[in-house]
Length: 336
Image (cartoon, rainbow, N blue to C red; front, side):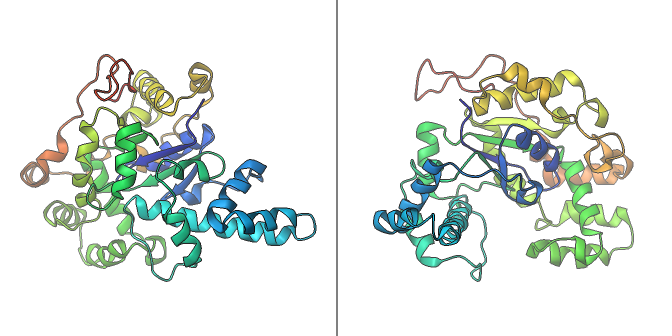
């Protein structure tokens, strides 16, 4: 049976929308940085999912009252349930070490109550199947209890999705070169859009990205290096998932998708593999493999190796499935 929750760590500029299309096709609702990609399909949560979350958020007595009155006051039940979902999203986001805004419209009492839910029970509270997309998973910022639970159970599974750092840099520059209204609301994007826009050429912008340690995406990619090395993390590259339409190969794509299906515990990997969407056609330039070659000079390559040589190291190739040293005999997903 497929796991109910999945965590995907995908540094900015990694071609994350392509992976989001795949996880959505597998039945996962994207949360976090990719939450806007999921249209409302009208699917309603099951009765057990509603009552479970209401009890955790409001207590046994209030949950029972809301459920008893659903026939005559269904709008009250739906409003209470949505408030609980919003608070739970924020609890998840905080435990994943992601920045939050103090003024977010969330009921603080609900948030505090859900914060006390044991880490082992947290994944069961969200209705349906959810995939949390984050740009980084910093071991010093993520909740220690969540990490301890993952260490002991490898649940929720973690997928690390990354891309050649040169293509990531180019995609970030393209994003920051757009009009102000299309850059988004992340503080570092707002600040660096002004900086990037003040530079006259692509050459100067790449030089900035390679020499400024605060350039968006660089620090978070470095904080994610542990994910490349952990045997319980399923590692996927954009170059694999891109497929032939974007400069990759069908064989590499199928191998990567099989690793993803294994990590999610999908019950029918062969059928699922055939049903997954292909990458968009060659017109989607932001997804093309190796687009950095049009922009990088020999001097840029020198700067790259001087400042970010550690980010160029390829992921090791796992031959046979790894075995979790904490649980001998239990295979882990083939992770590279």
